[in-house]
Image (cartoon, rainbow, N blue to C red; front, side, top):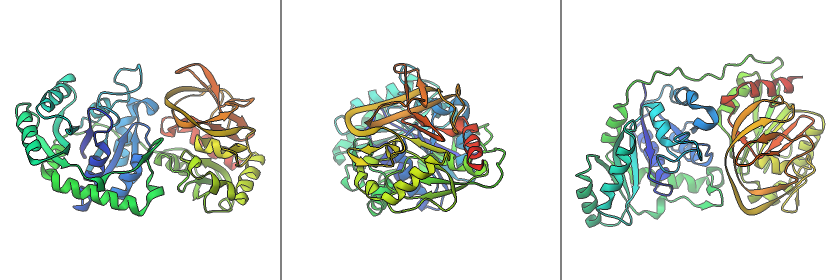
Length: 445
């Protein structure tokens, strides 16, 4: 039994991340063990959640992992905690395109039997807020909206009008937040700037968010609402895999350029018998000693192209490891790093391809099937993933493509050559733990 809240909003931009992160930090500051979660595939918000709570930020994605894994993954992450705070995605009822409620915040709230707190941007409305909240509260009777936090409220008079209107809605006001520039987090082409790139500024922003929430929200009422959640009949997910022999070292790229990763990936590799060792391609000139495999996740290599290119010793080491046939799993940013060049700057040269920034945003869930055998998946393996980038790589697929995609249009993409599996598609290995076991096994050979 874990007390839990889902922080949702009518739309993106209402202030979910500010409120959710502020609540996490405020409750953690009171001595509670707080488990942070994020609905959907987002990698950046969980970094702020981890900063606020001191625990790994974990994703709950009903599309990539399936509805049956949402509650077990939640139970795994929140085990031993006093409170769990789940930040939603987009608007409360928005999910995967053309898939009904699938992967929406509302669906996750129902799967977790969790009360919802609706964060409303009240900056341009007064009495209409009651109609908005009533509509969201009555749309799906299985979604329990237990309260509202009003964000971007201008004045005391504005607050009075909003409270008066909501008094007739039956949904209590659990917080009122004024506009506060100190709590804002800078954004760029793929969302918020990650914690790893801001460090001290991120710490200050999270502290400011916690103070704003403490001053403007009824923490006791929010905690009571969280504790009203019923028992959740779900056994915690376990990264249970038969370990390979030899404890092979798997190098995992991190640092400011490669911040996109799911905590469960390292847990699965460890359970499969690998020794997971992190390294920073911006700082380290060599791969971890004894590396038998390499995982390069997503991030923002385009922001650090010059620094990555200047680290010629590491680029050479990556190319040599790949040439030896060692397993290499690269997603999105990792794909770009393995290319011959990125925006004209030399990269690792593992793939005979050129990458560059683009004005076009590629975004969406993907149904994928492995086209070629690789250390990550046997041909024919079906996985679900997500694409999110403003770059292009030419060609978009090698002679042996990584994936065949079924939506939004049928195409092949990515590269499989030797032990390398490189693709734009982000995947969540908790849905297919055999991928981690297969990768570790190839590393041990």
